[in-house]
Every structure is written in C-alpha cells, then in structure tokens.
Length: 130
Image 1: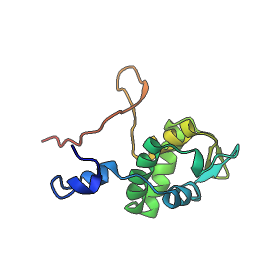
Image 2: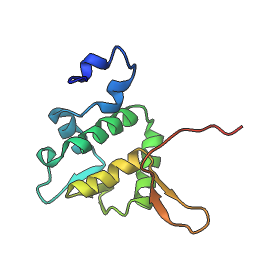
Image 3: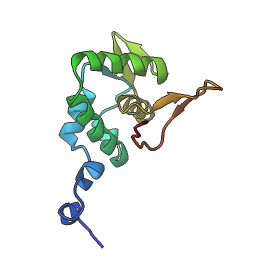
C-alpha cells in the first residue's frame, strides 16, 4: 500500500529507524572506523541493502557508546564472533565477516547456560524482570 517510507512515517512513529538504510557515504565512513581493517579489496560497493540497514543501526548504537563501552564492545566481539584481528582491528574481507561484526555491535551473540553453545539472536525483545 505504501511505496515510500516517507509516506508512513507520520502514521507509524519510529518506523524510519527500523528501515533506515546507510547511504554510500555512511557505509564508507563506517568501514573506515579504527576498529575495522578491510582486506581482499572489500569495500562499500560490495555491501548489500540488508547489511546497510544493519550498519545504520550499528552506527546509531556506536554514537551512544562511551569510550569505555566501545572498548567493552571490542572485547565482546573478540570473544564471541570468531573474527580475526590485526593491530586491534577486526579484519573484514567479505560481507559475512562484516555481518559477524555487526552482530557483535548489536550484542546479538549469547551463550546458552546449560550446553554452553554460542548462538546469534535473530530478533531481540528487551524485557525487565521484576
């Protein structure tokens, strides 16, 4: 029914955040952050639309992190993602590795309490326990 996102943003508050896609410039800027090392000629032109959406969400999350939280994020990703690092930067050579990094930024990795399996959450709902 709606062909443009702008048409529904007045009706559904906050929907633009869920479906925002990083621009070419935003994607390029994200890939050149100090904790990312590109290899194998990987660049922003090789990033598809669905991953650009994840980049937009990750960039928003990073903007709200303190320096201490950013360091904790890097440590968390090192311990959970299986990504290789070089000089304190994650080596990203393809879109799958980029997705692993983005899952780490959005804190999607978790370990099951009994079998100790590392998993990725496909969806997230924040809950508060009383």
